[in-house]
Image (cartoon, rainbow, N blue to C red; front, side):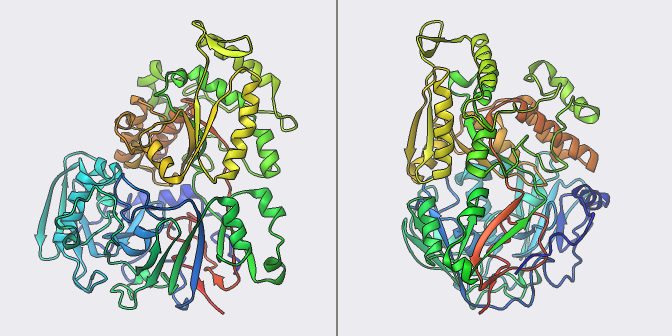
Length: 604
């Protein structure tokens, strides 16, 4: 099925934000909650606007994944759990619509209530909510889940939990969270924590990885698995929430299966052989030139392109500033100059993909590359003395030569910056004044063939200025362990960013992550201006202030030169069996968690 690409002509993100930020927070129990204003859908909505309420049930979808897994607990730091486990089997109090910047609707909770200041939030559970064994989801399960996740779970849960002053049961089916910090996003974040069955975990150490299947209340249950090889989910015929408006048109497959393979090339081969039924392609040139196999020609497999209106996020090689060689911004800028993006993009993508120019590029939240002005300049002014060059004056990535692997002009600029930072080429090798070589390790996940190609081209360019990086390939479990503990100098880094950035940005860029394992602050940045901009974002009460704070954060991150960015796709490219379909109405976020397989279906 081909999508009707954004039929709401002229509806820009700025207009959407303006609409949802215009109205005040509602009083009394509500069916949903938005970051600003009211939810777009009324209490009596029939289904999410991008779901097909008449989609048939049945069939299966099979995905191929590189790597493997060794745990079935995705909510802790240890172990490597399979993608989809929490997504398909466990639910949250509220469910997110990916057609709005940040709006939640009742899922396990039938209602949500908060005050104008959002100093507290209260949820009331649906009386019919059940775990997969038929037992009711209780307030006790909710409170236990929040406390154990906030104190023993992955660090991503701890930031918000630290802002909860009190959690209390306020009725037979109601729980209230009172906050100790002004933060308007907390009322939404409290609706997005996975709810686990307390009785299953009694007497067990939650912090340990395990292969015990967790019990949830979601639409699927684990039907079978073999660590590192496959995991299968079966639709629960007794799923308590199948008739909810929020779920109508979702969770249509009888079976969802993930098969694991050695690397991305094998994943592609398995798809062309018909072993899997859907494949997300990330290489634009490959999409054009290698999707000519028999199943495409016969129509058994079709190619779909899914547009979106979300920020580019950041993808590329991150430099770990915990290593002194990357502590100087001049060195990081030199490393960016040595990376000839235009040649690499031409070689791998035929020059078809646009470059990531900032963390929130491709959206209204992205920074202006000229001098900071207006509210953005006002927000950054108190930090002017500590900001790297370009944050206030404007910063743009260097342009390379698409026809040559090595751009000599940019390398000359890089050598000058290295020299200013105390590094010179001595006897063919980059060294400091004491003769110590400029040495670092690039850690990559084995099987990521495109990433390895990028690094190979980059490493050859670095050799021309006396730098020979050590490239180490590790399996998926080791990669997770090393990046969780920041045991790398440079690594491949991807951070998807939404249209409603908030508290999670502290986990990405906050100083706490410099030493605390498991954060997403892989670069090890400790920048007060970044944390101040995040605070301004979550405390904003107007569209103008929110956008200005995000653009200011974007400037701090981009001018920090922590990542050598590559490209981003403006569309998602999905090849899939002709029996797999999706609605013609594409949501604001496009191909995002909540789209495939949630609203897809099988049809003969």
